[in-house]
Image 1 (tube, rainbow, N blue to C red):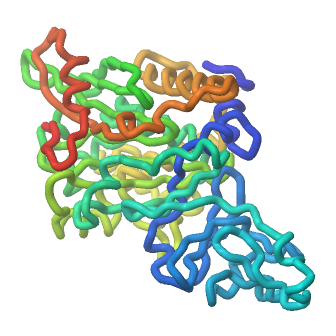
Image 2: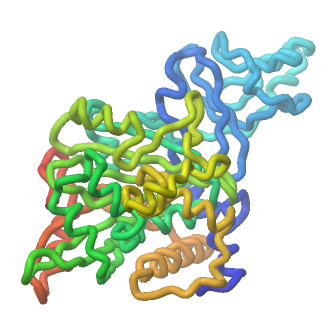
Length: 427
């Protein structure tokens, strides 16, 4: 249980809040590259950390991310004309370049210098790994671009998606580091999903007796979840949690790895990113077809949006008969929607003062502590953790060890060290 004050501290991410200040010190995934497919394509609305922004790719291919609203009369620049090196407001023709600088006010003479006085707030962007990233913090503290493994691999080895989740980022992220719920909520889909069924890992993950061994890493937590395997052995799943909001999901043998990012749009909504990649091979046509159809840890979207087809307005397409027959343990189809349905049911911001936590919640407890500690350290002028390549270039893993083996920590850290192009450990 945490206090209401502590809950507010962790959940509020707008400008000037402690967590908002912390998050603005990291590169933030803002858009899929495909959302801005070509120079002078239509602009895209973006909401990050309670700021309403507009993104566009100019005539030269440069990317701009700036305040959504024209400095003249406050018109949304989503209606703007993207042409000739800038985004022009259709109301009175004011035009802005990718830095937010106003470059033309048709009603004012160039000699007046009025244009030079007008600049919208704008944030720098980099494009790598199929993602457009932005940095929203102080320019003098801008870190090197992200170096996660899925950023390094070729496009053929990677599949990315994102979905709008109608909850605060924290309860979504906490679900990502809670391995114990897999044995219940996802048990039906482990038997049926094409990317999970038939693996030894899926078999062992159905065990409902889970013990955790958790260690701090350079950029977050290394979370070990232990279940019974064959007699005399334990099955270990190692989840990586990396500040500020990333998880890497332990793989199943032969399958690709998966990761998530829960990026706050505002305090009541987040964008849940999903990254599937294989370090050493291209994704197969069967894998891609499954993911594009909403399988694995991806989901089916309403066409033209990032809202899931199964959402709170249609009760997530709940099927009570499938629930009764344990086809889907909760009656809801799809691993990602099973998660979001329950996380959204907590309300926009979960009331953590009413919780009764147990030993399997230790990863959640430690992540909350690590977030608060990082924000407090930033207030004291210290550099946030997880900004360096060593903290980002890690893997999740799964493996089997003999019962009572003292080697878990050493095995887990060794298995999670990323070496680009090398195989990874999975059962």
